Image (spheres, rainbow, N blue to C red):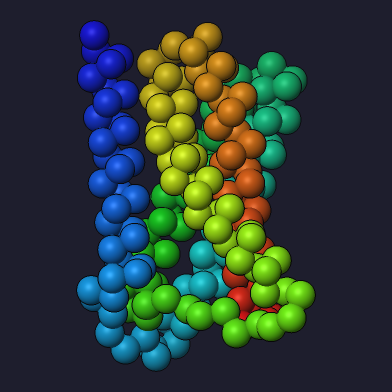
Length: 174
């Protein structure tokens, strides 16, 4: 009964977080001038945090494949930390700066939007999966953790990598 309550809470939290992000990004509720040099650095910071999360995910996978559980836990919690810091930085940037339009044209435009849309859709799926997978691990429900992690890891990896790609495409073509 406790698991069901916690998992429902994590799903509810995920839903609220996702709705909040969409309102923040597309609602322009808090958008103010984002010309401060530190604000202008946040997209790079976000890409670096996504890259760090990707690295942690790869090191965590390598550790668990070698049955190094403590090392695996360290790297996966590191990926959680990097992704959490990314989310905070991303929210601050979008609250201050608003949405960034993609100005590229030609063949790169559909490539960018495919990457962006798949990134957004899969990040919505990944968030509750990540939270539940971490919960299962921290409560020593390893059999369930393993089953869900087989789906969560590739989702999280894809979202982290495409986050860096979105930044790079905006930077070089936007």
